[in-house]
Image (cartoon, rainbow, N blue to C red; front, side, top):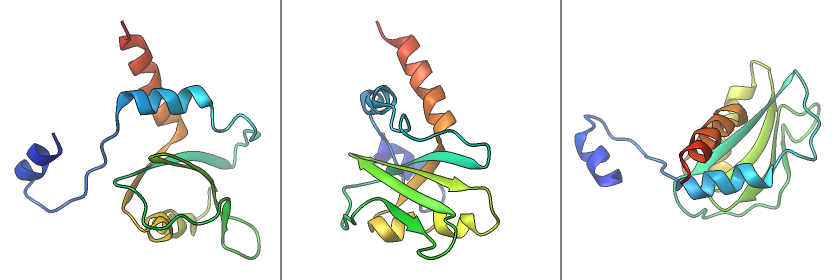
Length: 125
């Protein structure tokens, strides 16, 4: 599927594809169960496009000093589990996840991943 998508797209891109079982397993382990939900914090999942070349010690907080804007909490196989505060500077930190892990990633909100999980669960035989 990846090869066919790359062939058909009129531009160069990186594609992140993950198995539905991996998404379902991620939903089942509930990676945010120990984190209190807050209205000013967005939970996210980044999907790695390949095995990471760098495996930094986690958790990581950005910026390193002062109030945090982004936290990378954990890595679970192909997924990075994190959260960020709603702030103008946050996009720069989100864009840097692939530099920290050293492979391209694509990031989606936890609510999007949970919705995908519900669709996959409904499709189970």
